Length: 288
Image (cartoon, rainbow, N blue to C red; front, side):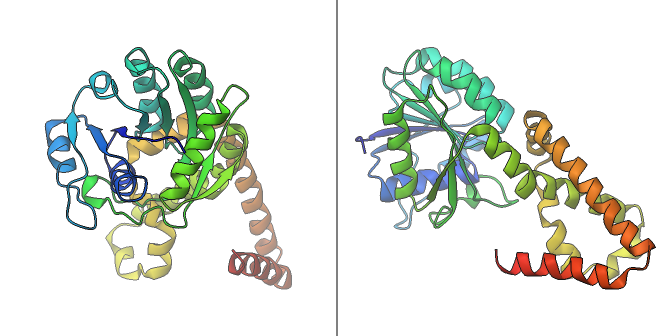
């Protein structure tokens, strides 16, 4: 792994802040520059500390172009649409040989737009750490966020192989387990495991809302567990749907077909078949 001395993190929230902690503690990074969108965000990121109580952000700025000038690695820890916008904005200010990565939960559009642009100065590697929660902001950052979490790396033909290996090593050092796949394959599978569940959770909440106050005393752990992700940031999830709409629409179609089959089994009063369907889901879920 190359000697990464300076890292710029654009978007120091839960993911970016947690990376700041672990990069200092586990990767030997000497200097971390945080880029925020407001003065309050700069004040919050200044409070992030490692396990020894030491501050991990050495410098902060509101200007992404200024913040990336001396970085060996730039991490775009932003909503997916902003990743593309800011990625375009900073290219001219990158130092030669810089590696730029993102942590967005959709990959194809980001990777195919930013890979050739960043190649003017350095390399771009698409990554997606499957870690986090509905909590946001630097105050939620923690040093063990990526421990045993899967991080998907999505190289394409133009991805620099050396840069890709460096970033794999970096994610491994912060505790993640590496999985590599094409960006389109990632987007299709993550639509099933992440994007569709969020939409379903939001639909369930909206249905419950339609019943008014009388339903609230009947809400227990089953509903709360199933709909936890509906608390996620609405702007972020709008952008996810925007940049992965093809795969999401495909999976919504499959979900509607499956719902129709379940409805038909119930309408036909095929209770043995219904039990088999529940048992199949139960068995597979227990094995995950």
